[in-house]
Length: 318
Picture 1 (cartoon, rainbow, N blue to C red):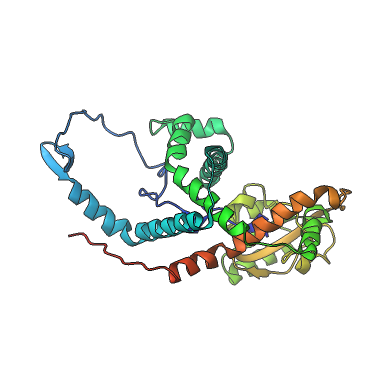
Picture 2: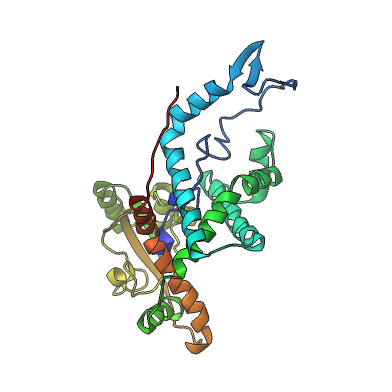
């Protein structure tokens, strides 16, 4: 159910680099422009800053970061190292061109996530918000390109290593063909956190309340909420589709529970199956099928790497 997956700030959570501020960009509404800082040369490498003649040491910085992010950051570095080792063992490599292409996708996703988080619809509006903290979209993009390069490399290596082990059956290709080119359901959704919230909303809808307005104001899935609940078209054979395929256009479903919350779905239309020949799109279908299998296997694969590795930890703040 691609349309109800909530995008995290990073594309693949288990491969993410730790962003120390909690967010690359911080809270746009609360961060103000920093005071002007006088730049001086510090020759002692153990001193990271001097504030009103008081020194802040590298050890103080390290201790603070370890206290705040130590285990999580170390886990990321361990996973990253294991992926590099596995790629080397399998003879898998990546090119700068591949990394740059993936990096563009990762950074675009980050900026789009930022805009969704703050309900910003236009780049021009994002520019205005960033200007309040002394930056702009171009600088933000440059920062992300530098910060997330390692993440892009790790994602690519993990994909290449795993995809080499994946074989797709003819039946799976036919299923993907049906998902991509078969009949599609067009629908809108409202997602609530609790069953009681969903019960209340369903009563309001049955009493004539406007579906789009409630979706925009109450749905916890902010991606679809910003579009009055509108979802990406999906197959009547996927896990959500089979539960609502019997509904007619304009009808509203009962409450459907998923891992993401309690859903109420309204059928808004149906798209007939496409007319593309199976053979002509076979290569595309194989790529989609392998990508789906990769994402299903990613977390178990990482767990198995950790379980079969010799790992000694020595994280201290002393």
